[in-house]
Length: 420
Image (cartoon, rainbow, N blue to C red):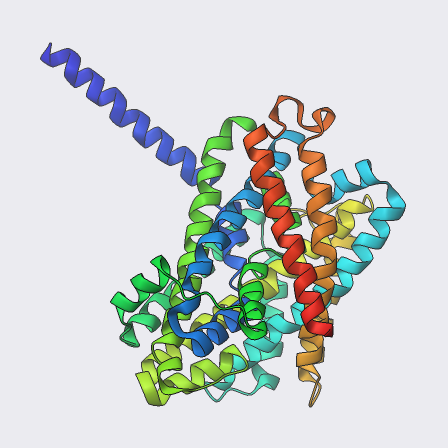
């Protein structure tokens, strides 16, 4: 009996190790896509939320987490089952004309978004007294080299390291000596307000969780990694863990600014302001940690965003695309990636560039395009010709359509708030 029990224990241990190895092999797309949520725009949104309302908006992390999991799960499942990217599926199901207008809009929006990421690089390095005329060109060259000269496997490892570095915000928050009792109370019994400014920040927090281009990156990453339906359960955990990491980072950014800036009545307009304002309150280390996190997030997103854009544009119009391909195998992909990097970095180097206007209009473009992309996505994931038996079940559809309805409502509300 003892021998049987020992053999059973040995089998279970082998299964645990086998599952762990398989999970580590699949790990990547979910964590990377989730982490890119915490880009320069996201960090700015969370910083402003903490500075303005203290701990009062921490409750938004719960719906943000649910939205992220629901949308990314559908993305991953579509990629695994169909073996095609979202752009390819939209072209096949919506037609070339509709696809053309969607992707022209996405391309323009993503150039604006890439510019915002390089603005984050410039702002974070200014905290360390490094000029944007040094930090931005060097960062742009490094980003270009990583993608053009690297392989998908190599790039993915770098991206996962970037994701891990974003956890520095946990330390930045702890150095601010937060009030954990107040944090717990704000999560359990939030003081929800119905003022225009409060609702605008709520919309910003939930809305920054999902961007149109992210859906294309997630699906293309699943395909480049060569994942199969047998990997689905591990991919689901990848999505969930990535969403947890994303929300944890966002949570601690809000806490860091709430426990320092809000308590001292300091208002900010961007993430760089938060890093600089932390110095006299929480010390040089807290300020440097916050700025370093902003730099990593910005350069991370400045890499992923142009890759995703080049990938889905090329895929939509039938060109070869992918980091694992050589330049001569996918020239359109690499030229488009290069042009987006050059434009985004060059705009930042223009003296007195209208960065706030660029950020505003890229947000408007995202808000207009997000409903279109999400509706296309859920219609495709329910198409049996594409998904076979892996279409959404009734529960997934309830969650999916509810999420999409909420995100559309938030996008419309954001657009109304921006114009009126």
